Length: 489
Image (cartoon, rainbow, N blue to C red; front, side, top):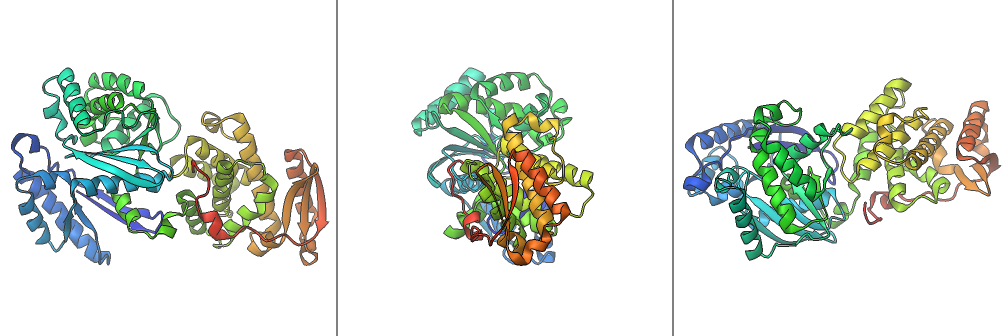
């Protein structure tokens, strides 16, 4: 049972409360088809607490959903009646609705998802095809983590045959061939945490972590030999996940062979986020989740709302050669760079790096995180990125990101973080020159300190600094910056 409260931008609201009670409602479904009385009591106690919290927090329209365990149980209707007695109004999702919601969650985080979504819950596994921003056919099979021990009792060969037979009968064999299998659910996130721990991976968040199918086979063999108690000692793996990790990994190993994906990618976004995403209008859905989140973060860091977009537009003429996906990262960095300017330099650099490496961003991979972190470091004066960033992207990527950050530093220093100055001035690389254009009424801003910033940036870009009089051309519209444009974003 889980209570999640969201707040913030509709396109990518932030979690302000996430409370979980592991009731294990479906643990005996494979044996007697019933929700155990003690599990129902634990679940109802948790829901009673949640109902009071919702009222006290002033949340008047909570969405309460029940999934596979309640749907499949012989006493599921009785359980829902008792939930209603608490003043809640549960929706019982059918298998197709549950699968579609999980797929929309993945589309919310991976705009150009192409492959099959697999959402492993306690009572079922949802399989859904996704491509071109749309949800395709979906299916719900009774392979939840609480049911897997019974399915595996006959041994690995029998388990493999049963999974393969069911997938063939339902038309899923080879469905992800050459594409991506998106992994949703706490058990598979725990597998990512385990592998990240074993490999000393420098990021803390498992979202967007990638497996190769053959790698999962190796992990399945290794985890079978590790007691759950040792798994619980790894930060990020709860006791409940540790107990189910071997079964969940064994299932993933078989699915990797039977679905034949090119790669497997972990998604922290699933059913809950999919329900939110499904309620959005088309225009809001089209917004880029990374850009929305970065803008919101910059504002919460103390920046005026127009400042980040103004800085992003000011930088654009200087880096016209950037590929679309890198231009998007540059914009995200600019939106983040406007917050935290009053902090001590060392603290600002450290906080910026931790924000990018440890915060649960979506719409960005490990390379992108490292580049934005390097840009933010340079924005605060760090020209030599931390070694951890070099393990996530190439030296050329880091050089480009440092140049972004140095230009942000110059722009914010020139404007003193006043959006109008950025909107009316212009910087560009023209004929081996770093040209800074200022209208006549802003010319007094170019003092010795700004001239030094100009020279320093020009040296970094291997250009000659030139000051010219003139008004900037119209900056990019903020609405166009928000909307996802490049494939792969």
